Image (cartoon, rainbow, N blue to C red; front, side):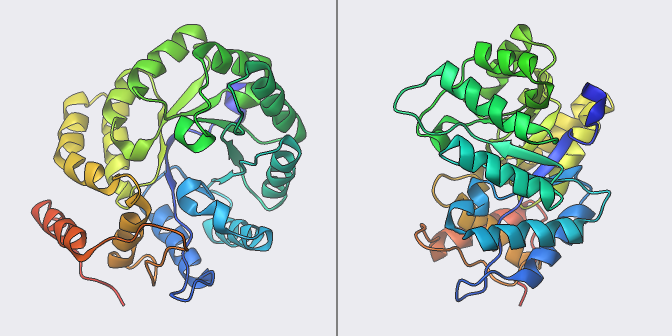
Length: 305
């Protein structure tokens, strides 16, 4: 069954949703960002995640983002679509729509519950998986699910009950240790790291197949993964440690999306760094810190118009 979805591996870059300065969806930048991402050598891209501002989009905007991204990506570049919803029926509807529009996989975080309930979560995921033909990437990220935690036994059981649920985006810290724990329960689980790539090298060492995360220099993550996969462990570590200051800086809580959009804007991938309200803006001092860091790493790029 694992051979049915060979495209779901490696580095998937989670991309933001570009907007015009007045808040309207920027379709031209969406196309440009898709081409930019594809051309950086990643294995695929994920849209409408937490940092894709999915909860700030209308349903018609969601459809437009999916359709345009899939069209621009082309048939050989897979797109995974975030379809998390508070209700199982809503998640099924979002997931079916993502598949209809060409999504090659869906990413689903657990619904927020008053208390973690393994039976309820199992029913939720198996219902969604049974309603679509594409893989379901289980997102284990407690902060995005109201603190809902997923035990390694639950994750292993889901993968055993539905091969479509054997893909895991693991963001429950400490993530490298949990990678090992999940694989000890069920070695068939295919694990992506996340968290901005902060623990990417260690996640690979513990058995992850790649990462599914946002980072405005995705080619760096690609370089790390390719070196590691080729057995160049020292080379992978050298690249990881060289750029860790930027990975760390970009992943700052509350301003990571604004920082990422600012970098994409600097790189010419989007026309505006606008983030829909409510959000935490980035001050000029932080942007000065970013410019200094990019220069020191040899990644300095001019601000694009």
